[in-house]
Image 1: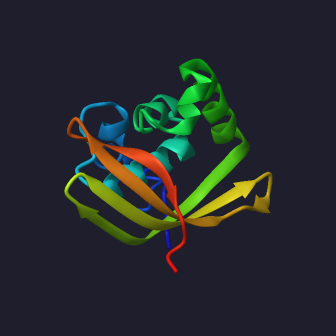
Image 2: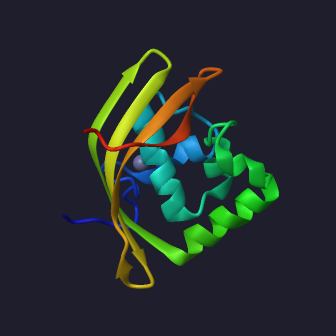
Length: 138
Ligand SMILES: [Zn+2]
C-alpha cells in the first residue's frame, strides 16, 4: 500500500485533516466506536496525548494516577513506540455500548510488539470513550 505523510495514521486512506484531525482538535466528536478507536490509534501515532486523556473512560483504572501522571505515562508511550498501522477486524455498537476488535502494528525500538485487542467503548454524555480491553471471545 502506498502511503504519504498526509495520510491519516489510522489507515482510513483519508487525509489527516479530513479524518482524525478534527477529532484531535476538538472540532468534532467520533460518531462511532470504530471512529473513536481509529482516532485514538492515530493520537498514539502523533503524540496527541491530550486527546488520549480526554477519550479515556472517567472510570478507567489509569485515572487513579491523576491527570498529570497519566499524561506523562502516555507521552512516554507515544515517544517510545512506533504506531505503524491499524486494521479494524470487527466493530459493533448497541445503544451506548460498543466494541471494536483491531490489530495494531507497533514497534518498540525495532522490536515488533504488534497486538490484537477487543476493546470496549461507552458513550458518555454523547461522546464515545475507551473503557478497556475485553477478554478474548471463546
Ligand atoms: Zn484517521
